[in-house]
Amino acid sequence: MKPSNLIPEVLASFGRAGLGFFERLGRGVIFLLATLASLPSLLSRPRLLVQQLYSVGVLTILIILVAGLFVGMVLGLQGYNILVRFNSESSLGVMVGLSLVRELGPVMTALLFAGRAGSALTAEIGLMKATEQLSGMEMMAVNPYKRVFAPRLLAGFLALPLLAAIFSAVGVFGGYFVGVGLLGVDSGAYWSQMQSAVDIYDDMLAGVLKSVVFGFFATWIALYEGFDCIPTSEGVSRATTRGVVNASLVVLGLNFVLTALMIAGE
Amino acid sequence: MTTRAMEIWVGAFVAAGLASLFMLAMKVSNLSGLDTDAGYKLTASFENIGGLKVRSPITASGVRVGRVSDIHYDSTTYQAQVILQIDPQYNQFPTDTSASIFTAGLLGEQYIALTPGAEEASLKDGDRITITESAIVLERLIGQFLYSKAAGDN
Image (tube, rainbow over the protein chains, first blue to last red):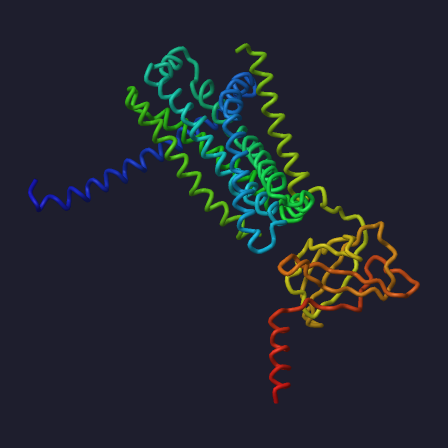
């Protein structure tokens, strides 16, 4: 390559990457709209939704339970060690409750969900595409949006808030177990200070709202990456990786935006 | 996995999720202590409310008897108007009851403490508490201390 061509080449590669990004984003939005448009058809076939709730929700419970318990326990341990310096270890409940309900519950659940359920969705749909099951369905006049994508999107959307609630609840008990059971914080102070600090609207509703938004985006990205993959085994593997990475980054970025909005709205 | 077992699992999952939400609402957040509009309202003016907020507790002898339902600034009297929502069962406060803003602990939240007076008549809905004591502002306290210290040295 001549040196005079180097700079235009670099610029062109940036342009290609930018156009590719917008192209995929545009296809993703069209995919999302088509899936949303076929959601009403689920009302006549709720069984499809129950199946997906099982594979997306029930199979994710175990990792949520274990992660929630340990995150709560670590919060109890770390929080106690910091708070005891200021002689205010009775505020441990406040720290554990607020950080779980507002931040860690929705975010950690969404990240685990992207890793556990999202990757499975991407791989499943990617394989369906690679083995031409999706085009086969279309050949048989079965709409894959109604049959495959809509139930999965709705299941992820419904499952994540429930999983986040389980995570937070288990985490609060994990913190209680370490703080009250092992380190000797007063049990009454743990619960009562938590109750006076955690607000039902500003904190709990905000957390639930966050997890609803995360559920929507994490499932959408997982489904779309599967739908958009190159139909080879390598393409499916790359799509799965990209799905998990993109979903995690979107969740973390959205978390900042939502937190800023909620704090500004108070 | 039979269809029935799957349905049972999904049902258990949804039930566990809803139970967790319920538990968080009742046990972790302040829903159980959330007041309805029951009770009666009193008004009190303060020179300075410090860090008092809407929903801050109101106590009498340390027992919570209500919550602050509204705070606004009155630009005619140049004072903060605080609306106190008192629970209906505590309707025996004398008319010369005084209200003071205190802090729970060194760094805790601020609350209003009611100290009953000696009058026969009780406060009713819409009445005004005339005897009030403002929040202690730490900077002002330190300023006064330094000032009196300097005055004492001369």
